[in-house]
Length: 272
Length: 310
Image 1 (cartoon, one colour):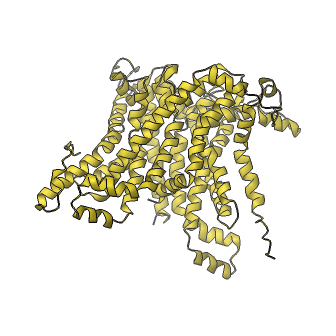
Image 2 (image 1 turned 135 degrees about the vertical axis):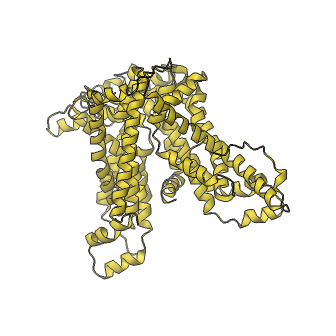
Image 3 (image 1 turned 120 degrees about the vertical axis):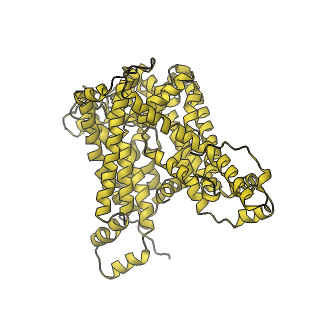
């Protein structure tokens, strides 16, 4: 008979820690299906007595939540696509092509990661105000079309990638663009996936810039909408928790699906 | 900066051509590949950066251009009690959060760096608060730490302990927010440290255990020194992250009670976008920016002196 391996005793430390870490999220889901009566009790119950979808009905029918959700999908989707295209092109150029000013541009771009957004937010708002684009989804997308982190990730990916394939294609007479689209992009898929995951999570979760630049309810992203929903339904905890669940689900899904890539992107960006 | 906005000329990219034509082709290709992405980033950071400095010398209200007021904003700042309160609150966050996240992150990473089953499960658990939005985390924790309805006070009552003011208490709110911030962020430190520990040469660790080194000795003399670059990175990153603390304040206390949780960025937002004193807000933002740079540069110099960054 095979020797039975006992589970490591370190589980005794790790398990309680991880439970404490995720417990709030478990309870977020449980409380979203409770009734207002249950949640206004003190102390609040941990397990729901039954499954009540009143909270979900309030948030979906009694507010603009579906619209906010759609706005967030549009904005995050556009940002992800733009960054995949622009950052991979830029990363490839910085890693492979010798052109005037490439070094200094790359250094400047990466240095901008140290400029905090609160420093640039007021003038950025004034720029959009001047061109009349405040309170539009475009104002949410345009500043995020490209990112220093994205360029950095893609540049270091292409630097660590062997050039032989491209050179063979170049000798066969392919243009730079043809090489990029036919040879380079297909092999860059893991890096692109990592960039997509990290960009989506960042874009979906953003609160500061949307709070600043969006005024009307119809243009809220899901984060801003949820914050304002909470302000208007102070005591309706099941509805607030239902909204929180719906807001968290997309990032949770993307994270669970692309966790390996996400962790690679985080650690890759650091090691670079 | 080179601003030759190049047309997408593919004809120049053949393989048998004189050297300078090839160089030109490389410049055209390079700039048409890298130009758009770089220009967007630099345009949305360098221009606003200079503009913000100019704004900080005006009384701009976001709508009219504003009059030049010289150093009046900076002078007002020195006498502004809310600014100093925001500075204290943010400072408290940094001082508590950085060591806590480094220690917890490293310990959990060391525990995870074993042949335990379910390492993926644990890593997922620790990262979930990190990927959830600050809005979700804020609303959820705002409820759990609510004075009158929250789970936390419910737990205290069940344990026979006195109920606490938590987020409604001026003396406790900032500590509770720090705890929430820590909860959302320390998974990042775990992941970074774990990746670094996994890179440590296995032979060194084996040699240490053959030589009879205790767990503590191994930790103290092998693991801690070899992850030091990550510690430096996490410290710098953590300081930047903590100084920008905004979202959780917005979704829990809104700076209250009695300004007890106003952080610098929350104050900048209030100044510029709710009180419409954008010039003054820009001055506060600049002071924070320069202060951060000084902190980081000083940190690097100290680290280098101690030979950490060799």
